[in-house]
Length: 420
Image (cartoon, rainbow, N blue to C red; front, side, top):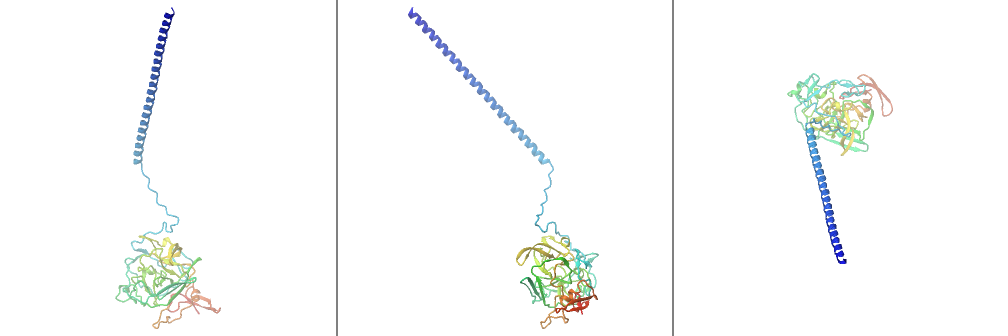
């Protein structure tokens, strides 16, 4: 009995173990199935995410294409113009309005009570003699054509031309014999065979002069501009500069016939310009080509090729403040500008003039200066500023005495002086 029971127990244990094994296999299989299902779900999620990314990329590409089409068909705005820098002194200035050579006529454009832009502020308005006897064909109405104007024939060289410009303390001293160092001169008196003779029979000869000017080295502006006389300055080539009028207050550059360098002599033989000489080759606005009697420099008008300053760009004295090269340095200073149009150069003094003129004294054959008549002192000339011929005048002598007289033109002079 005992052995049979034990055998039966073994059978039951074997059956139990087999059952446990069978159950464990089912569990393992179940876990494997669950793992497979999870992996399948993860794969599905990944595929969905990839598909979403592809869709987003396609949508962005489509939007980019739409934006590109829209931008290519939309109207384009014009680029904004380049703004002038605040430090540009010529912003909005200059041009080439007189490229055709037709210039406005400046006849009788003067004032005596105060400066006026485009006019010459004269100390007195007394007319003298001389000037062209008739109008040239280049003058039409209120304009004249510089390209059609004739000039006095001749190309005379004066090898003794001399000018020195030196600094002494607070002064700039300029000494010249009034002969040009950079060009020849026409034949004066004008010859009867010269076509210019039919317009302007200038009977004067060019004479060597003795001129010495002491001007302020560092000029200062006056509280109000000062009037001018016939002479206004000297050019760096040694030739004197007169205002823009002839003796009858007509536009000298238009009416009088000068030589090919735009100069001629007056009755004392003083060779001079009224306008910018063609023999100064297109000077620019930063180049000093002369000095006015108040010490301020004179420049050309060119800003850049084909762009020039004109009277409308300048102040009432025909000047402006801008950078230029002076005494080897770049400085920003007031200066006069020689333009193509009237009044051409200095039309009033921005500062206090050191002299009013006349400054010239012809040199005789013996080398002495003198015109045969005494040169009036500057105080006698100043006494008749803003006065007319015949007006009473007075001035103080160096000894302190009061000298009274009458304003008149001394022999061979172009400015009124107080004559006792």
